[in-house]
Image (spheres, rainbow, N blue to C red):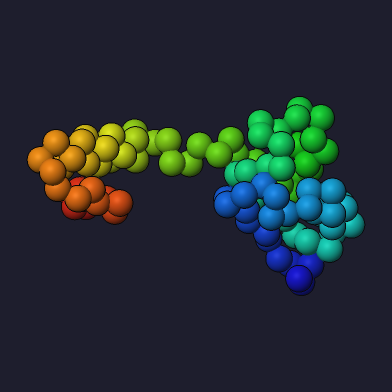
Length: 98
């Protein structure tokens, strides 16, 4: 990667070698990083990435906003109703965007 790159991981902590990432950030071989997941969940407080100014860390809670949780609950209840009626469950969101 170019030294101007910013790496973002919101998928799985194991996708990134945190020790190598720390070293690349320290040596300015990467411009920055944004992590929403970690190898150890929850991350240890002594994780050296916490001490870097060029890293943004979030607690893997991006989908926990009120609107997203409401939509998930509504979808679950719709699938319960479909099951009760003998209908196939829909793995996709049945609720149309407003």
